[in-house]
Length: 105
Image (cartoon, rainbow, N blue to C red):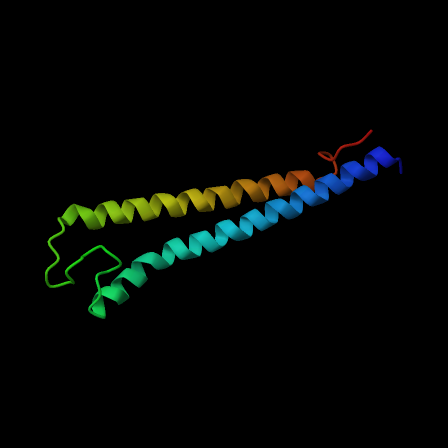
């Protein structure tokens, strides 16, 4: 095996490892995004401010009805973006591992 091919293979292996680490970070982000509504509700039920959503507590919350909808849309879009990123990065990792895509000289 020539030296150029071996270094190209190592580059692909390093790239795949970095992609998988990024996927791990995106998966952790997706879990954190999915947990936000539950954490806000638990904080509100415990007498808290819902992490700033209702500064005076649940009884004195004067936020309009659209605030919850905007919050839900924002979380849904963020979750969809992280899942899309995971899907695209895994597809790229598969292509890099495929023999037909590897660098040959």
